[in-house]
Length: 74
Image (cartoon, rainbow, N blue to C red; front, side, top):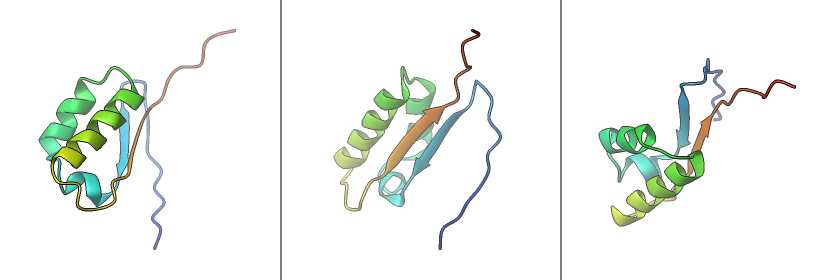
């Protein structure tokens, strides 16, 4: 059954949506470390995917990383 949740966001938050294919093979501490050092959402998602594959990758792995960015003033 789908779950829909609204998240408050600010410019300092990074949001991760993932399947258990990631969390089964990468610890919460390692995920936090990667997200804390990310240079872009794409880089972080690719690194998290690779870590899960290197850790065994026995399940489908879904990773979405996003960060709100301020709209440039016109």
